[in-house]
Image (cartoon, rainbow, N blue to C red; front, side):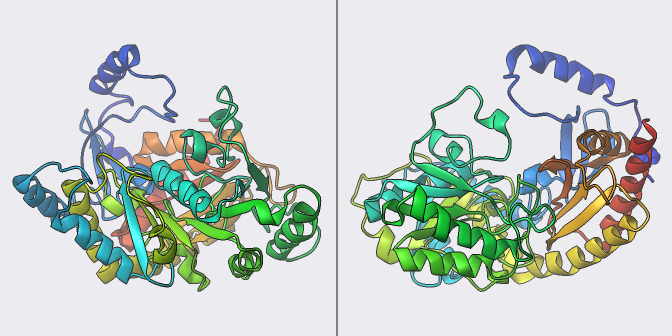
Length: 441
């Protein structure tokens, strides 16, 4: 199935030519894993400039939630473009208000909310941090090792998934203390319940020895950790974190930039544990490919901001709001449920593959946010970093687009509209890639 879609030796001549042009004029800082040059996309399929067809299980880093060029999203964008392309958020328009109303109705923070609209996840996180400081008057924060929250200096202070993201940029925003994210597969604390162990560490060690709880404005956490390895926290952890924050008057911020908007099989990943934050950040899949981010906060906090306390020139862009409204309609009516159903089928297929390959240490995830951690062998659990990269490369050459996360985890974040036939094709291509990588092809 793979070879019939790959027409040229990769990268093909047109791709090579464009990459060489780009090398002279684009920043080298972009973390590119393999030479894919996109031409067009439809649903879960994409084609490069040489006519090669690929199955896209990266979705623009979990951005193309409804698939490439979904007709309903494209139509909404075109209609908005016919009306006007921009009006600053100093003013009002129907789509912007409708989006805020729609998000409010989804209940992300468990009570009446207000929304700040921006263009990206890192901006949404910056808004959340500024609001937390503004509301509490406190200077400190707690983040988690392995977390990714963006690359601007405030969000970068929390980002701790790869040291290269901070190297050369120190110091970022001061006042952030990191604690371990609970990982039962690679436990850092004694005891079977790593979630409770982390909570005990914060309460009984950190707060008693280094960070006064009374100075902490907020705890920022991903309900399912993304860049850190697609880690699903133990049951009880998020609820325990909610209770800890409530005891000390600390705001709880859920970064759902990657895990939200149906990715986990529910509208918000935190709904799997029935926990709501004070502030939630959303982006990535919200616009089906158009740049939009949201800082959503409980109204009783957000309404304390005075005019001019925070702003954004492009926030509420009509095209982006139209795309978000269409996306939310599709996700709420169909695609979140599809992600849950197809995701379960996908994880079962991956666990069957795990039984045949000793290098697959763990399969984990929820919905269509799935990680496969590769190891030297399941006994030692030593991360197989080179193997992970080789699998990505071989998958590309066979027609499957993937990305990695954590130390050696292949992550699967396809469009939420895929069906089991897409999964079956991906599994065939993945097994070929895995065999080739293990053989050193």
